[in-house]
Structure formats: C-alpha cells, structure tokens
Amino acid sequence: MKEEQKRILKLVEEGKLTAEEAIILIEKLHTAEETGDPAQEIKTELSTQVQFEQSQNQHQNTYENKGSAKHKFMDFIDTALKKIKDLDLDFNFGTAVDVKHIFQHKDVYITKLDLDVSNGSITIIPWEERDVRVECEAKVYNIENQERARKAFLEDVLFSIENGALRLSIQKKQMKVHAKIYVPQENYESIKARMFNGPITGENLRVKEFRAKTANGAITITNFDTDSVEVETANGHIKADQITSKDFEAETINGTVTATGLFEKIDLQSFNGNITCDLQGDVCHTAFVKTTTGGIDMFIANEYQVDGELKSNLGNFKSELPMMSIIEEKNEVVQKSLRFKANEEKAQKLHLFAETKTGSITIK
Image 1 (tube, rainbow, N blue to C red):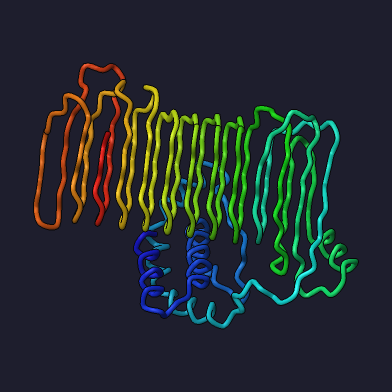
Image 2: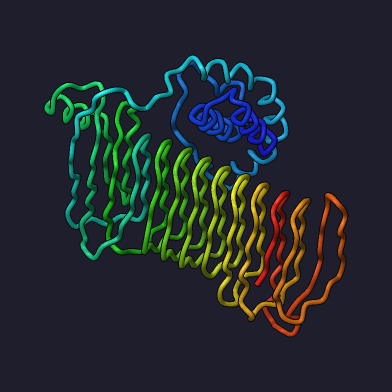
C-alpha cells in the first residue's frame, strides 16, 4: 500500500490533487485493500464507511491479496482521480441549523461499543454512573428551520443498545455531529470507533480490544489498559499516553506518532511525520518503528537488554544506551545501518528495529 500512498501524496505536491481528494482516495485504497478487489470500490458516489477486519482469518486473507490489489490499484488510479474530481468534495453545504440532542439509557450493562460517524468527532468518556449518555451537538445542512433539522437528525441517527452492545451510526454526509459518549467504568470486550472526517478521543478505558480509524483527523487516547490496540489515520496525529497493552499498533500517513506506556509488542509507522516512543517498565519484547520523512526518538528504560537494528538513508544515529557494543555498522553515502547490543546483563530482552529514510534516529 505504501507505493500507492506515495503516488497520491506526490500528486498533491504537484498540485494535481487537493488534500481533500487525496484523503478520500487514500480511504478508498484502504477499503480496496480490505476487500481484495479495488476495481469494484471506486463508484460515482464514494462510500464514507471505514471498514474493520472482522477476524484474524480475514486479516490474513487480506494480507495474502495485497500484491494483486496493489497492481490493480495502479491500473485504475487515474480513473479514480477523474471520478473524484467530478464529485462535490466540499463539506460546507451552505447554511446549517444547530441541533442538540441527548440519548440516555438507565442502568445498562454493555461490553461492546460500535461507533461510526461520518463527519464530526467521537469522544469516549467512562464515568461512575450505570447509565449510558450520548451528547450530540450537530449541524444539519440544507435544512431551513429547527423543527425540520431535528426531525432529519433523529431520522438519520441510529442509536441502540442490544445484547450488551452499544451502537451509534451517523452516515449522513450533510450532517456534522460531535458526539460525547459517557459509558460506565467497566471492563469492555471491544470498542470500535470509525470516522471519515474528524478526530477520535478516548480516556481512562479498560478494554480487551480497541480499534480506531479515521480518514482525516487526530486520534488521542490516554490511560488505557488493553490487550490489543489498533489506531490508524490517513491525515492526522496519533497520541497515546499512559497505555498498557500487549499488542499496540499505530499508523498515520501524514502526522506524528507519540506513544508512552507499558507495551509487550509495539508497531509505530508514519509516512510523513516524526515518531516518539517511550518504553517504560520491563515487559516489551518487540518494537518496530518506521517513518519515511521524519525522525525517530526512542526512550528505553534501563531494565532492558537491547538487541537493535537501525537504518536510515540520509540521517544519523545517536545512542545513549549503557554498555553498548556494535555488531555491524555501515556508513555509506545514501545508506546507513547499525546493529548493536546494549545492557546485556539485563534479563528482559528487547528486539528493536527502527528505520527512517530522511530523518535521524535517537535512542536514550
């Protein structure tokens, strides 16, 4: 997928494609990759739904189909660009009517959240109450009066709690909704949050599986206790602070990535942006960090024995790790690499791979 993303960004630099068009095309690329048949994904009216893999088997099948999907995408990208340019991509549809509405359920038990909003924002906040409360502040476009705007809002918003699952879905393009979701402070099985245009924010959550994806917007999570986290945005920063997770993945095309916490396995990637990773404690065994046009700053606790590999085309390496020994080093004009070990007397072994094309790598 990286080559297609590079080509899209190159078209933006050349002025052949606007940022809004690039965001939609990248989102369609993600959708095409998930289905394995991108030729079917570009239509006259582009869907704004961000899809999630439903199972590990589906994820594996998607991975196996990436090669063919890439070649198909390169074949139809020019056609897709033409169709996108024919669309009205301006989210400002003119005058809007403000609508405020609160959905509230008393004394509920939920283990899953499924949140899907086209335009606006999602904020997830746990509280001590047993109630679920969803506060919506909406702008409804192409509507002239308050009564019609409220009616349109209620018709287009799907909110339900069934079988322990809360679902909020707002797919209307001519509507921007900022949703604050207050949920009981419990241990959740899964939380999935999807945006097309807007940020996703969560704090103080205990959840086994957390997934967040937006085409255009930042993702910010704070004080999470999880087994698995996957967060992804095409255009926006990712910030994860005070996280405890067995498996943590974060990816952005245009934006910075910052992650701090206790991770057993961590994978951070950005195409255009710096990456900062602070590995605390002594539980991490694998760290994979990669960016194309940004620098990498790694902060590693002294409790780790580090087995590391660093790569950069144009940048430099700087390490302040104690008792570091160099295994292999290359310092060519356009390719630098370094393999090393450090703190070998420590019990917990960390395998580190960090790569950047144009930036430098610093390890402290």
